[in-house]
Image (cartoon, rainbow, N blue to C red; front, side, top):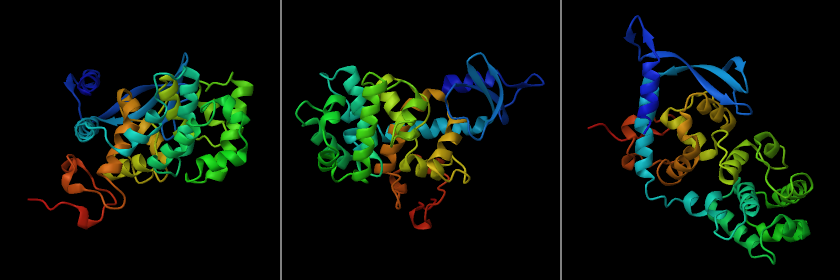
Length: 294
């Protein structure tokens, strides 16, 4: 629940001795390296950037209700992302921490423009190699053989090249491990912010932002979390990080992606069965999908 955070914000907002719940300015501490697009940097305080952004209290309360509805709809955790996503594909009791982090990175690199079950097939092919899926094994595998192993994922030719280059960098510069730094991971060939944020969260427990893929980008706009100015996933991530409570950042991608796969689908969402249909702006949804009011 986000009740405690809302209560704290209420207590800090007073006007003439009375509580002000309409709209006010809140100070949100953002760790160095996090995205700060579309917000104004007021000043630096020690190692933390203090971001000044307008926070509408009614918006946070609406978000809380929407979030609770999403959690209820996602309670079974049986969407493709739950079964075949990067978190599932990098789990394993026998995996050493370095290997687990490498699996998480390769899984997110393969997942771009690819359905989760197809990503899972490619990952299983790699894990079945002699020696398993490790930095050392991939370094010894030719790019041609790697293409055959991941055939089926989107842009598999380019991804094979990126995986080879990234793996070499990890072994040469980072002791065959995933660096725990957003900028460093984003600098790896074929690895953007969306992938880096997921890999760091899974591998290091480092929640350094909100990962926005096509599902999160679509859902955020439909239910009113992002504006029409957020025309790309990167812009959507920047808007969400400017106001969404940090305590849900680590769960938001997984919850919303599954919701997008099962309920708020593209192009035809299942609005009738959606628990937050009365809390949704339905931006961009065709009229035929909008439930009639009783």
